[in-house]
Every structure is written in structure tokens, then in C-alpha cells.
Length: 309
Image 1 (tube, rainbow, N blue to C red):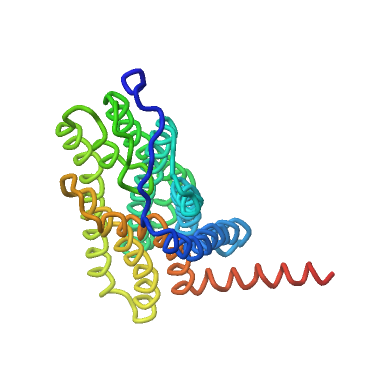
Image 2: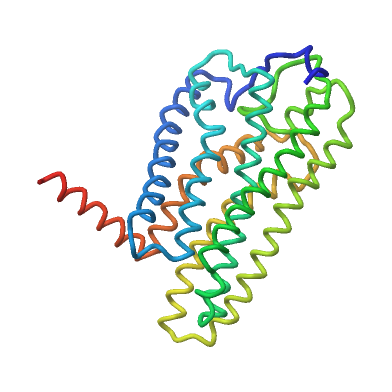
């Protein structure tokens, strides 16, 4: 970080400049974040304690929920507290750390969604071999591989960033640290770095999205050979996955598959995938999944019965 020693502190412009609007955002976004942590945490707890949810699909879902909590927590707590601050600052080291974990958990989530699509492909297209293919060992390898992929991606982003000289100004036109807003502060040409970031972030999102779309097309084609009851159950499960994929990949592709810009709507799109989407995922999975709802009801009943004793 020796080349960045001229700037030690950065200032966020924030989402809105009006203090009244910021206070309204605080009142809105704090419950959303608490719902994100509570909802995803409930899924993790339910999968862990419920014997009926020990299949690979729920194993991956619990890790997805853990990643969702971590992903949201890299940005939202700082964002919420800044809504009540007149000057929103972060150290340069803190900014780089936020970028690392934001991209680490973001790409880990992308790869987990691909893994979950593969799990559904095996379950629907190769049902007789499902338990042999999706072994306990393979499930752990796939989760570890997703986290490793996120780590490698994030490390590349950070190695690019720390080589840049930052000698002022120090105002980031955003409400959290990300690569393109930070690159605009570098006192050198960052066009090459921008292309590398575009390839690293955008192509991962696009390729993963294409793999997901292809896998679900294959699944839907294979569903023609299933009974009406089997089709309904499989479609219900796949619909939840597809909804989450669209909510996550839509904003990601919009932001990272085009050159750096000054679009003001970028901030609003970022709010959607950093604040709103992590809260929606547990709702989507529980509303469309009878097994999860039953397991949660049993967990709640068990808690009430233990409280009465």
C-alpha cells in the first residue's frame, strides 16, 4: 500500500444528500437488514436441527443463507450508520477490506447458485443415481470450491487495486467501496485495470448466468417425462432458484458488464442487490417450499413447548 500513502481516508457522498431523506432511509433499511440476518439465520438453524432437511439441496441452501448474511453485512451496517452521520468516512485500508469481502461473498454466492442448479439437475434428470452422485464428500467439496473461487476472484481484484496511486481527491461518489468508484480517484489512467475488472467480474457473472439458464432449460425439458405430481414439486423448487438467480444476476450484469459510468441509477441498483435481495431470498425459499415451512413450524412448536415446561 506504499503507493497509496498520500490518501489515508475516504469520504462517501452517500445515497442521498438530504438529511431528512437519509433518516427515512435509516428507518426503512434497518428493519430490512435485521430481517435479512433473522430470516437467513432461521434457515441455517432450521436446516441444522431438522432431520427432514438433511438432503444436499438444503445443505447448499444453508450455506447460501450464511453467505447472504456475510455478503449483506460487509456493506449494510456501515451504510445504515452513515445515514445518521453528516460526514461519512472510511479509511483506505477499510475500503480495500470492504471491497475484498464484498467480492469474496458475492462471487461465492454466484458459484453456490451454480452448484444448487447442478444439484437440481442431478435430482431431476438422474434421480436413481442422485444419492451416489451427490455424496456427502462431494457436497463439501462443491461448497469449498465455491468459497475458493470467491477468494481467488477477490484476491485478483485487490492486487489490482493496491498498485494504484491515490493522491486526491478522496470523495467516493457512492455509499460503499467498490472498484469502479474507487478507480475514479486514482491519479493515473485506470483503463487497463478497468478492463481487467470487467473481465474478472462481468464474465464470471455472465458465464455463470448462461450455465444456470442452460441447466434449467435441460431440467424443464426433462420434466416432460415426470408425473404431474413430480413435475409440480420440481417446478416449485426450480421456480425458487430461478427467482433468486434473476434477482441476483440482473443487477450484477447491469453494473459489471459495461464500462465505468456516472449513472446515478447505479446507486439505486446497488441498494437492491446489497440490501433488498438478501432479505428476499429466505422469503422466496420458504414460501414456495412446504418442507421448509413444516420444519420451521416444528421448530417453533418445539420452542413453545420447551418454554411452557
